Length: 256
Image (cartoon, rainbow, N blue to C red; front, top):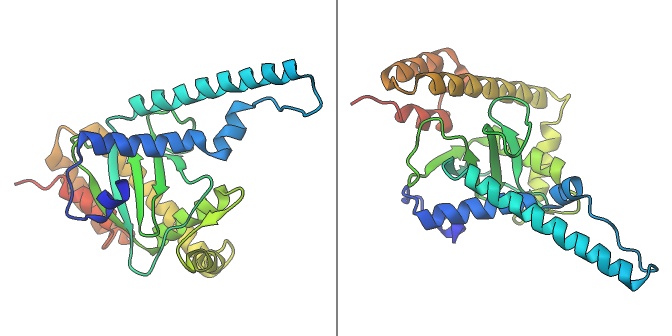
């Protein structure tokens, strides 16, 4: 299973079958979530007091709409099939939560525009300890390679905040996990000193990573130049000290 694969931290090779499983699980979940179904399908309602022939007509409309809807999921899987896949673990003492809209969708280039945008990325918690990300493959990772990262506290809180904002009916977490996540969201709420610092730090990290992604995209043919750039950025940005995501990125460009 995907979770079993995620838990085996010695595995850094991704079989074609596992890549397909992960892509299918994450992307079809987007298209099966209440948020997407309500926002995109606009399915006709069926009233109990209308004639049976009209009920059948509405049923056929629903079947057709759902069929076309699922075709979009297959198209998106094909579009993202060479994107990078990462298994992310929450730092010790922190836990991810999830909900009825469990996939976070954003853009690595700024404001999110569309699921089918080449810069869209997806994040989905699959357990209290593990999260999957699918993101544009700037570094030309081989399809059979999976990246493993650790999210420090501020990243986990940010993910849980987005999950809380996305949920419609229910939240899911480990024992006491939702309670702890909600406590963190209160502690780091907008307007509090801790919350404003976290908000500022996360905004700066997003800005840094977008700048880095653009540089890598433009200079991928010169790994030594990219490494020197990353080394310089690390020296300038305190937020990148002991940042596991950034350190893993730097290792990709070590020469020799």
